[in-house]
Length: 614
Image (cartoon, rainbow, N blue to C red; front, side, top):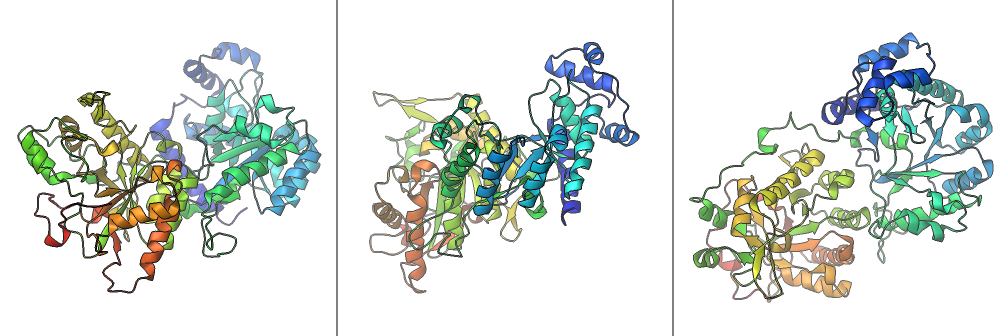
């Protein structure tokens, strides 16, 4: 038994209890007939009467009966990832019947210091003992492979199967609470109930690397395009990958595919620049490890409950706080106070529905006017995969600075671990709306028009905050002094309409934040040119720091040069002596845009410029 088993079990119980209250279809009773009836009602499968006729009655041990009764029909979450900020991805395996492909996989894993979980079924315990011993001799982990029972099975029968495999694995020195459903079942609900009753992690996969069309494939190059779509540039943090070792006709192909995935979708996550790469620089800690499920569970400090339980959070962080305060009478005042604009956004470009007076008075500096001397702000928009965002996190960590990440939340829910990692490293998060629809667009004749009605846009803003809250709502930064989740919102494309702004502020957004300059990094032609643009945003023409400047960058794979250019910018800055008027400090927006900050204040003299030149 592993040293952290007790802590891990406590975390597991906490997370299962939380998932019961949030995302569970309860089963009425632990009895076989009632479990069958509940499954029939939820999935449209055969009735309990029919299933009972198809499945012979079994004797349920007292401890299983008590576990199911205590569980009260709750179902375990089927995890595509393990909720953890650990810097890793998880490889899992099934199909242990053939020794030759298994040896190729194990040898490759040993040579590359990779670990994984090999799921063992009850049948394999009886027939493939030699292969199981082989897996253990390589130091790899074993898990419980749950197979479908003819006729659907009951929760009690699946619980007994879990116990039998668990007992069988003990002869190999393994005690595990990790269960995987090995194939489709017409009573998955019963499997989930059994896993919950037996206090197990019930894992699936974020990605299945075995496609039926590839059984006769002869190379990894044939297989890879079928596994990964165009936009899947890397695996996700603690995403679970599944490979069946005995599926391919070619004995070496499972190993070849595994290594292709490592090289193309895991190794590319690390930051690798000249003179700063994980191989040559021990301080470069940007690599993702390839690990087993148990390896992640053995880091309990990095595990978290997902979704976050919000009921215990202070009211000011909860959904809906601060909403409902905008009226026709006070909108103008609140907008001028809480809108940090952009120099290029004006009446002729991305502003719609405002009066001429409002257009004239709206902020166009894009500066935080109370910023401390020499202080600028780094911000990132959109969302991305681990290979783009992890590089940014490394660069920020390397230079001991923090940033504000304005997140599109539509796809963020597929990788909450990465979002949580952003905050775990001291950065803060704001919203870039849920699906990145701007408040307005311009037609081919140059006329502006509203994209979404007020009700739709309100839901766009609200659901974005709700998704962020579910992943990071409980996280604090700055030595625990404040929450990492802010109510700041960056309007998509920096476009603002009068109605859209009113809706966002009325929904509880504290400040609408554009910025003083965009690096336009998604169109950068070289790292050097991009670094030059960044430098012009944070410095004036005379070279002095542009105090209060907000630099807009992007975290998506389309901005692939951004981490390297930012690293160059920050490296040059680190090399400047203290007192150099060109040396800037990096602040967090959330430290300034709070406590009644008012953008209507007079722009300080040292911030004034006739024209900001980028």
